[in-house]
Image (cartoon, rainbow, N blue to C red; front, side):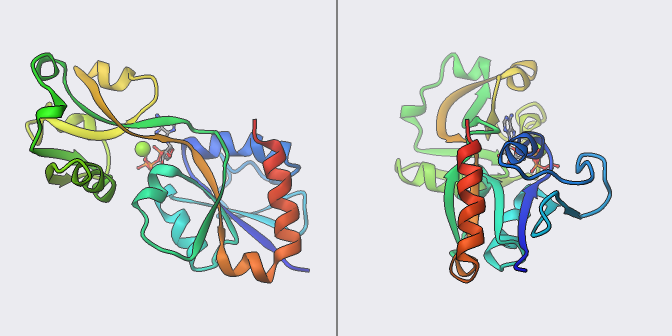
Amino acid sequence: MLVLNIALSKGRILEESLPLLARAGVKPVEDPLTSRKLILDTNLPDVKLTVIRAADVPTYVQFGAADLGIAGKDVLMEYDGDGLYELLDLKIARCRMMVAEPASLAARDDPESWTRVRVATKYVKTTQRHFAAKGIQTDIIKLYGSMELAPLVGLSDRIVDLVASGQTLKANGLIAVERIADISAWLVANKAALKMKRAPLKALVDRIAGAVE
Ligand code: ATP
Ligand code: MG
């Protein structure tokens, strides 16, 4: 029996992935939100789930530690490897990657006039690429989280972060001034597995595709 391994992102994506997988007929036998196990059995004897840090999903899939993965587009845009295919937009965990700054600054600022910006973000490559395409130089301050703190403590006026409702920005006196990308979670696949495990993988991917709303 060929086993199919699906790498799932912890956190927000996991909460929305589980109902989607359930609609596709894949149900973990233990609750991944509470279990301490890292590899979970499912109702299907040939499907296992691995729950890992969101940013590690592309690495697992690229190197074949997982055949499939569910990862945010934000994570995929930052990832450089070429051993994986982006198969399917799952339309879950939707948000936008935005440039934001203090509302007081935004009132007198015009992003079209920028020639050089200092930006705090965890999305270093995507941010550089976005501004480079517009001929704008960037000084990036790499953070691993809580980007909205950066303007409050004087690290940088501008940040690049994910925004859903905008409540976190608002609570910290920030406002989004430019959109970099629409974000959602995607199903990705290991390239070699798509050949070696073609029939069972295709069957599983088709069921997941049918469960996308
Ligand atoms: P941690 O918060 O544990 O350091 P993380 O930031 O990678 O890790 P999450 O905040 O759960 O974990 O984010 C994981 C993924 O969820 C992101 O890569 C993104 O695709 C998606 N995501 C993040 N923020 C939002 C949001 N506000 N709305 C919808 N999806 C989001
Ligand atoms: Mg987070």
